[in-house]
Length: 101
Image (cartoon, rainbow, N blue to C red; front, side, top):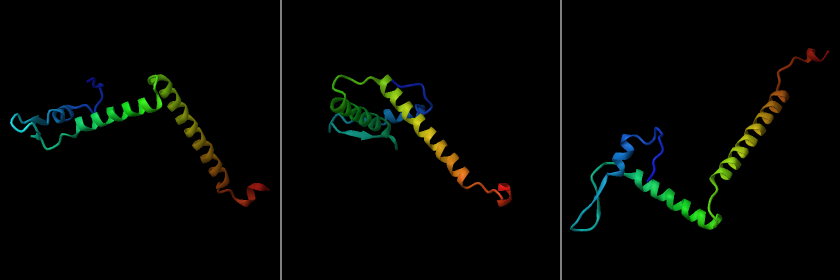
């Protein structure tokens, strides 16, 4: 697996990855650390991605297009929020009635 150089991939994360061992007599996985969900969460995310890819992107996922679409949506939402905030400020401005004369 590839792990990005990000702060969330610290020493604790990698300790969790090695937090279970397979018992050779029973064949079951046994925990020997208090927390070990890092690997489980990563596997669930990868499985979800594979399911979504097969369902919605049968020809493969173009991450550049998805990122561009996401960034466009975020910008549109931020711009609409700014416009709405400006309208609210204009409607609720605390001007004195004398300002109109």
